[in-house]
Amino acid sequence: MKKVILAVCALAIFSISAFAAKSDILSLVPTATTVEKGVLEAEIGADDPIDDFDGTIYLEVEAGIYDGVEAGIDIAKGEDDDFEYFFNAKYSFAVNETQSVAAGVYNVADGYRTIPYLVYGVNIFDEDENTLDLTGGAQLVEGKLRGLFAAEYAKGPLYLEGALDFGSNMHSSVEAGYGVNIFTPYIGFAKYAGEDIEYYGGTTVDINENFGFEIGASIPEKGNLTAYVALSFSGQIF
Image (cartoon, rainbow, N blue to C red; front, side, top):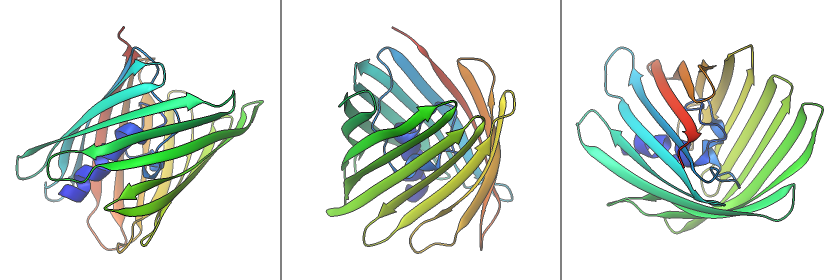
């Protein structure tokens, strides 16, 4: 269950949007931006194999404390009914209008090793609903330095994302989606070291400017179909 919890917790601090749980494959790579000051982002969801419940229920909370400073907590409960708590924090500063640098830590919890990271983000172009953003950096995992790289391309309602977490073992993921009114259906796959490729698909739904919903499913090459649902909130609280 610990692996599932770690994957869930990474989503909160690495996500681009509050309305992206399973769909945000950039959970492999921390972003170089932070939640805006006074904004709270929260998500509650469940990851549950359809034929036999042994999934994880989780709550993620992130808050913009100051300009360029965010902190959060992730709480997960699995099939053994034990709660686990993970803390994270990040500081980001803008180099100029198109570049930023961020440093942070996540996986701060009893019984786990804290993971520090440093990333650099740059907007290559942003015009006529046509954007390309790149992120690169490194993180220290169990005493080993791992490289990070991510690319996000969007043209109107279409987006394409890819991410790599590489070191002695490589993790990778690719996702594509298309926005239609309040819906953004997506498909993607992820490959983690030593495991089968996992394929997934689903849709996010923008209920209003503060709330979003997501539903989807994933399946490894050799494994059970897993459904996931999430409800997200993002709004100014101070």
